[in-house]
Image (cartoon, rainbow, N blue to C red):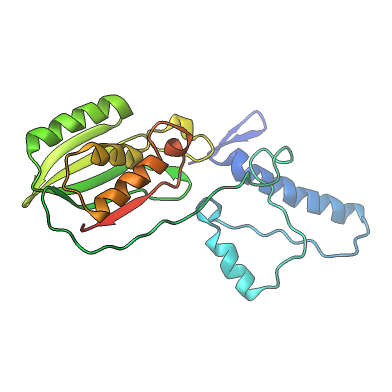
Length: 225
């Protein structure tokens, strides 16, 4: 996190994305001002600190200030890159009555940020034989390259999944813990229920290992079915 000064250059975390482009934009504004280039409109440089997670600071800023009619983001290797490539930030939700038939999934959770391949996830099961769950985890580990750990948590069996985190710009470098967990759950001999059917549908929509399954922003929260 500390910058390194060497041979007239600055090396440090975030120097290219986005501290360097921010300074390039600032010096461009200074050059225009010092050269006396005539402008018919004002120019404003806005520096936020939440760009990776939705730019909530800019949302607040524009609640206080009038939004500029023309704007761009000097992102990453600016000026080669001057905008985001785009992304899908959809949300899927469903509700159903609780089904108490065993064995069943009690809850599952995973994911942190929309632009990060999730590296952790967990699930709680009730009424499931530990030997069956352990064997299914071993098979899932071979197929997904994620690590699965089975433990007891009160009356439930808990599965913790450890993947490999990665930025959304390079999801192929990660191992998605959420989709790995979905793959495991969908293959388990759980009692049929509306919740289990919906979970298997999500697993079919985001299969582990393909582009969607590797993509960031796949987070899950299942409760009581």
